Amino acid sequence: MFVQVLVRDNNVDQALRVLKKKLQREGVFREMKLRRNYEKPSERKAREKAEAVRRARKVERKRKEREGF
Image (cartoon, rainbow, N blue to C red):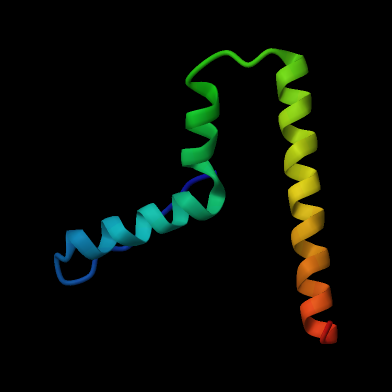
């Protein structure tokens, strides 16, 4: 799994911005932050469950917004 960014007209700053955006979208920075310290399995399970609840609430909120509630 490789991330490739083309540098056009020697514009390295633009290429770095594109690279950061791609890494952000893939969740690399978030993964690095989580792996910085050890996370107990029980803590991991609780975090993942809380994330799932947040995602479900967000989807429900978006659905209601589309339907006009």
